[in-house]
Length: 175
Image (cartoon, rainbow, N blue to C red; front, side):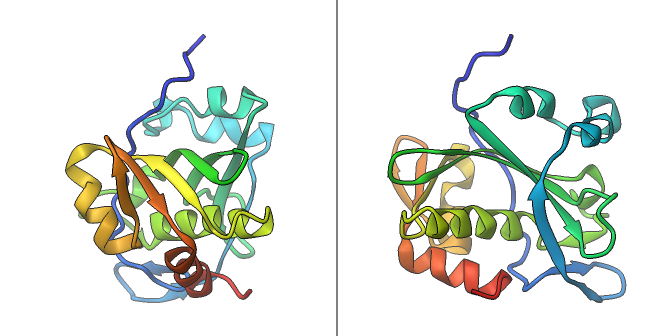
C-alpha cells in the first residue's frame, strides 16, 4: 500500500484556453469533467504511459478523482485530477495530462489549466471561495505564480486564492 505523502506536482500550464485546443489544426473542443469510474482504470495504467498510480487515487475514499474528456467523446481521457476536500479549501493531490497530451508532440493543449480550473470550481461550490492548494516541484513554483496566479505559501506549497480562482473558472466554465 502506498503512503499518503504529498506528491510534488510537475504539470505544465502550456496555455490557458477556454477548452482544449488541437495543436495541429488549432480547433477548439469543449470539454467536460466527470468522476472517474472503475471501468476507466484499465485505460490509465502505467503500462499505458500514465505516470501515476490512479488506482490508488481511485481506491482512497478521501479522494475524488475526475477525468477530463471532450464533450460527446467521453471514452478518451485527456487528463486526470485527484482532489481532497479539506475543511476550508480543495487540495490537489495529483494532476496528469494523458500521455498523448505531454511534450512537444502533444495532441491537445489546455488540459492542465482546465483541470486546475475545475478544482477551483469545486472550491467555490463547497463554499471555500475558490481556495485551492497543492505541492509544487521547486522548479515550477515561479511557473505556477505566472500562469495560475498562485502564490508560494512556504516550502513547496502553492495556494490559489479567490481572485485567481475566479479568473480560471470563468475562463473554462460558465458560472
